Amino acid sequence: MPKKKALNPKAEQLLSIPDIDRIYGAIKEILESARSRAYQAANTEMVQAYWDVGRVIVEEEQEGAARAGYGDYLLERLSERLTQEMGKGFDVSNLKRMRQFYRAFPKGGAMRHQLSWTHYRILIRVKDEVARAFYQQQAIDCRWTYRELERQIGVQLYERTKLSRVMGKELVDETQETSTPADLIRDPYYLHFLGLEDRPGLQERTLEQAIMDHLQRFILELGKGFAFVGRQYRIVVDEDVYKVDLVFFNYLLNCFVLIDLKTRKLSHADTGQMDFYVRYFEAEIRQQHHNPTIGLILCTKKSPKMAQYTLLKDSEQIFASEYRLYLPSEKELSQYLTAQTELLELEQRLEQAPDSPETIALEEATEPRQKQPDKSKKRQQKSR
Image (cartoon, rainbow, N blue to C red; front, top):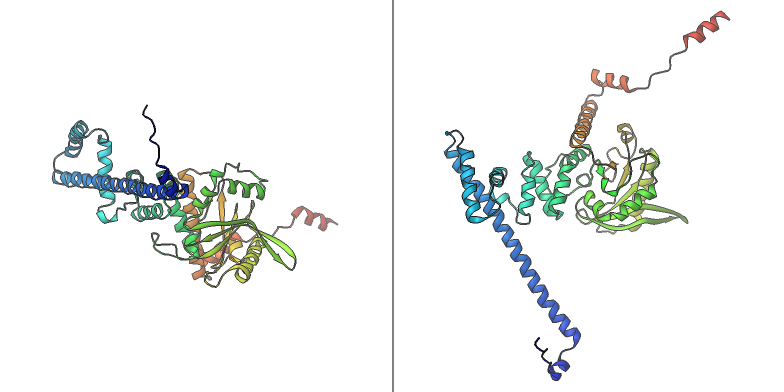
């Protein structure tokens, strides 16, 4: 084993340990940055190459469309030769994905270099073009891993965000940047990652602690731009102490977001409590350059009537959303979102025509029926 070369004593005097650490840190940063750029460049080139392969296949298939079975035969022959010469990754199923990739993103400029081929393999499964663009932008903005992208598609983030905007009467382009509180709110939120059993009697402090234990996942579920500020945030008014469960700051909206946790159905007292918290933050905490504070109540259930007769109606600062401790099946989630959308559309029609027969019939159907007198008691009274 070669002996370690002795350092020149004079050189040791010239360079101190902090100097060496500083120089080493600068060089390490240069090399790591170069490696990252090289990896990113390689990823970008491969994604572009797969798109180009898909384009060639689609164009060739269109030329030979008149010949039966031409497309399948073409893919099989290409797969055989590419696998022999280029190695793995070019089986028929992968070539079909490249073809689908080109069809999903026919304009090359729509591809983004921040996403990997695995991201795009997941995105091409989304059939709706607007939803696909939404997930693509969210994956970039939130820096989702491909696993997180797959999860968000599975819990239908696009549909939930769209529903929340309809509830807030903010019919906007789903791919645009978050710009209003209504853009921020989702309904429902899925907190299955907390590992809590969905049962009556769950304590709010248990829910809060579980959120703190999985804070990163919770922030991902909240959406873009959230930074954690604190839990059980103290508010003192006239020597009385109140506490906000969770406080965040959203840098995209430039405002505080207060979250109150309720392990039960929403009540009118909850909205009043949140209004108090929001007003306090507006007066005592919010800085002049901040936008108005947002309050979000997370509850197990809320009713349209409660929303109509409380501060939630037409409010741009106070919101309520349901949460779920389990991950529903795709069918269950679709049914829920469809039912909620239909209910909201019906309410909007009724608001526009309050005296229509449809409105009157609905109100009569939803009004509590008066208790009918007991006929046997009437007969007894007559006999007396």
